[in-house]
Image (cartoon, rainbow, N blue to C red; front, side, top):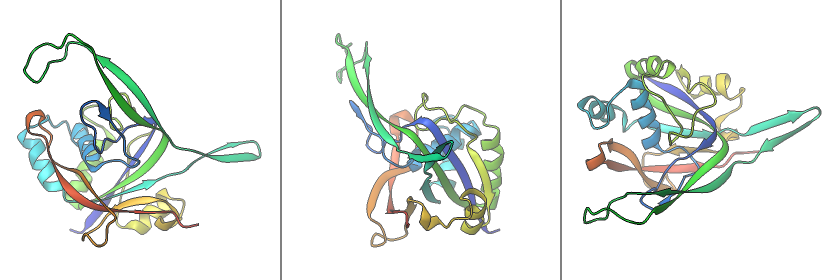
Length: 226
């Protein structure tokens, strides 16, 4: 059977997509990461972190092509309308009772800085085989566990599952108001190094805490045509 495009609608007041989020500074990228998107799918399927079932799912899906489309948000009041600007903000948290590298209790509070995107909306497309597409349709429509936009505090403001489609033309007709993909700023995976503009370490291989593993994927950001 031919591949299908599974569409995920990622819309929320706050989102956070960690591209190099480690230790004190937890940054957010401007597009959803593949690691977070597939983690969301694992939660919807009810797969325990580090389990054999989760590993088997990642083996099937981690190499799938992913496209993330930035959706501009417009507010209309009377005769006036304007596009809402996406902002990246930073918050900080203090954590007590942490452990040092030697395993001893740290008497001092540890501060971490965390970034979030505000007022962002994305459409993410995963190209997978038909069987997996319809399995994701079922699970994303009625998730086993809660799903969120990068962090547990970032709750979706709309249903995440947006449909299964045969091709990009169907996606444009049904979810992009008939406009072509080129009318939207988007990030897409490419097949060769020469075709891309950046390399991200966000292809999930294993989510288990003590052996978390990610691989590389080559991407290109395409600015919207006017």
